[in-house]
Length: 108
Image (cartoon, rainbow, N blue to C red; front, side, top):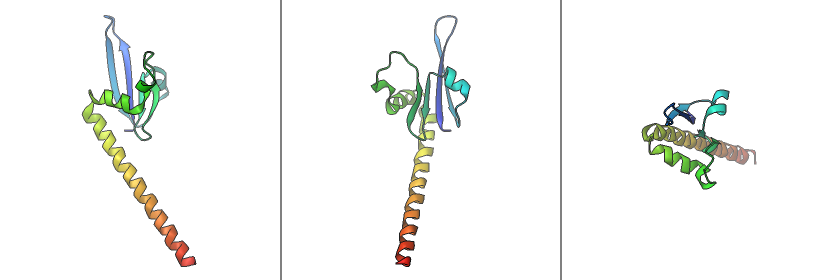
């Protein structure tokens, strides 16, 4: 799961329902109707459609912290997944750098 997609809809009684979904991709429909879309791989806000939100309110960490109060288990699982992924990417990059340095030394 890469994205958190949050949609609010108003009920006939005037109250709002909140739908929180974790997804591997964003559909066109999500871009049209979602209120908030967070990208956990790049740790960025894809969409934020709350008219009274300040610039500070629109930052990834601030929004993530808000939803983490309500969906802690799900969000922590996604964050752990991307933490491991990012460490693996760094390890592979470090290994490639080491191999390139070794190759350069042998060619010298």
